[in-house]
Amino acid sequence: MQKITILPVILTIFAILQTGCGSHPEKGPNVLLITIDTVRADYTGCYGSPDVKTPNIDNTAASGVMFTRAVAPSQCTNPSHASMFTGLYPTRHQVLDNRTPLTNEAKTLAEIFKEKGYSTIGAVSARHLNSKNSNFAQGFDFFFECEDREKNAAERNKLFLRKLEEISDSRFFAWIHYYDPHGDYAPPPPYDNMYPVGSNYEPVPPQKTMNLNPRAKSKPVDPDQIIPLYKGEISFLDEQIGVVLRFLKKKKLTNKTLIIIAADHGESMTEKGIYFCHAGMYNPVLHIPLIMSMPGTLPPGHRVDKVISGLDIFPTILEIAGIDYAKDQIDGRSLAPMFSDPSYRNHLIVISEAVDCVIRAIYKDGYKLIKPYPTDWAVKEKQLFRPWEDYEESEDLKLKKPLVARRLEIRLKNWITSSNRKKLSSQKRKQLDPKTAEALKSLGYIE
Ligand SMILES: [Zn+2]
Picture 1: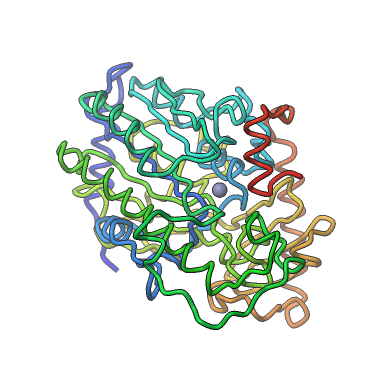
Picture 2: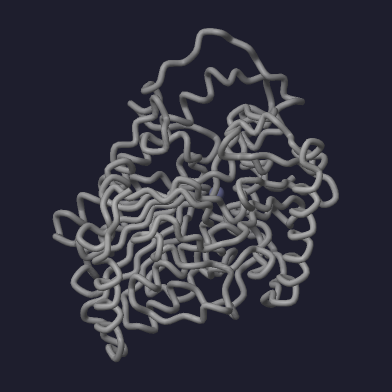
């Protein structure tokens, strides 16, 4: 593992330059946060996929830091994004589904960068992330909403890059969210035929699918036909990420911009009998790609194998940008010390929370306990795995290791009690406008 000692010095320089800059930051890095909806880690090249082509994500990983054991704070889009933007777990920020807006009480990354004088732009590609529904626009000078059910990444890039061009002479914090790999899977040509469709037609009956994909809900589906389309969506998205990266290169901004690529959650293809949706709390859904790159500042080709969370993005970005934040007020912990010391652990435990916290997972010392409250269709009872040694999570160890299971259960219970004491005010679920209601219904999120 490469040992980089110059990094803390560079981070300190950024910090010194930031201090006292008031509303006109001169030297802090730009930040580009790219969130890729519904991309599981093992369906990208750099995380070990044998066939899915993701050259742009792979190159970004090669030029920077790749977190090989990153866990989604939630398996649901809005709660997971709220965690990335606040550094808080869902129990604390109280966005527990795709219909509850983030409270104004929350201090988001965009608000903090705006206060520091950065230009801030955001662009989302799903209706339930629109400001009215999510309140994620707080702190953004410009926030591109999604007028349709979802926005194709190529279309999204057009407006986003036009605005980024306008503000690229100033320091910027920019967020772009892409939705393409989310079901249903319909990549544009040539990505729809990029991966061969299997010839063994083994349909899954609709009653077994519990599927968010409306096409698959109404008739038997063949995983061999569907999985190639999901892969095609990821490769299409990767190409669109490449468009943004080439823009930065053309503007000579690559070395001045901290680039973060992170998924909000993954997707279950067939694993554990969960087909084409992000239910359950298993690796296909919770193990996400998380990559950070800034050539000349972050170490190239660096791998971090500690279990970390998507909510660590918040403190890490702020630390690299040299911006102070209330460390003891948030759940996230900066990943920056791991750039020079791979043995550093930023968390004793990592948690993930499902919609409405009906299931939680706790990771500690190589184990993962999944605990449903009280029962969920995808997970009926508590389960104990070694998720990194047994990636398929095929062996439930709760009977073999009852003490480990018990200890993790108690630890989780204590964590819930303590987090409940520190939660932000809860917002009421939104009365959905007809178009958003229709979009969520067609995605299977509401009846
Ligand atoms: Zn999502």
